[in-house]
Length: 91
Figure 1 (tube, rainbow, N blue to C red):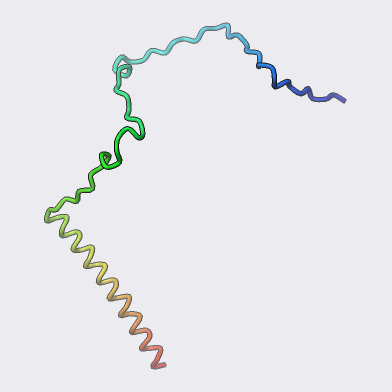
Figure 2 (figure 1 turned 60 degrees about the vertical axis):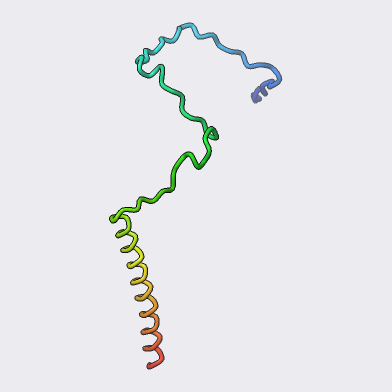
């Protein structure tokens, strides 16, 4: 019966030498001098975006329609509940 050889982790791992040199890939010159990306934490959070809502007629109309639809839905839900409650009391 053969036993598995336990490696000695206190010793460095032997590295095999690569006999063939890797061929260097050609990179287009345009991609070599790109500016570095900004690193996280280099700008303040308020500089990343500006929460400014446009105040044009189109944006106001959409907000009005949105609020109107919410009110209509609320009336339908509350009114429907009242009608169902009234019908249940009649039965």
